[in-house]
Image 1 (spheres, helix red, strand yellow):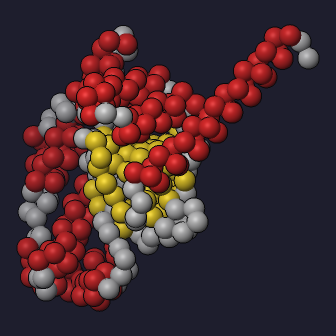
Image 2: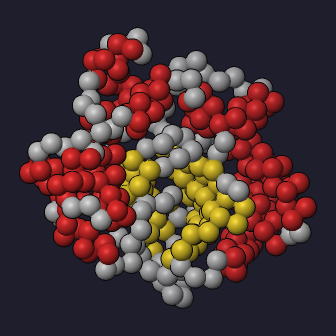
Length: 317
């Protein structure tokens, strides 16, 4: 072994030792910050999650965020794509999408412990400009979710952000934005840099205009031709770009939003299946029941009764 090889090996060993120490510290700090199962937001934009057992599939809506797991394992489903992540991998999302997720590894002795940091597109754009990274003009085919290996530098920055939870409020208020900025920079320079640049351009991008419209008008009939024409796109081009970003067709996107809202109405407001289906745009009760069962696995009222008696919650990243 040459001197250079020995130096590289020593540097790699130091990096491994540091990463292991950071993982152990992250576990300890999250466990101390959230001592019971659930989700807390101890700092604006920073959420911590704890679970002492695996969770069944929950449905919800994503938002631009970095997701890091300190202990345990989780998977997120978007359309027909499945994303699995654990302490060695992070997940990043860049748009608001209907998702399903579940914790697959957790126990009383080794609970699932996770961190979610919301990514502000304005901050991302600022870091991109200062770092001298041009934003691509055409980001229409960049999928809005992805998983990558968690490197030691990014992990270290996440640990330092969580560490601020134990600092005095003045110090946390001053340092948290700086550490968050570093995290965004490290994401930009890493494997997910292209996807992160996608976050910065989403606000003015035509596909996101379509996402916003579908979320706003999910209970109205979907006319893809009208949306495509308003965005200056052909119907086939709109379908292609929409599915490239969201991993689902416009119809699938709208359907999941409708069914998730119907589930919320039955659980939260006590509506019966027919009323909830009608509220979200279904005028045929049998059609609503079929599609509901296809997504959630059971007919509406049976699903709601099960949820009321079970330890379940909406999907969170």
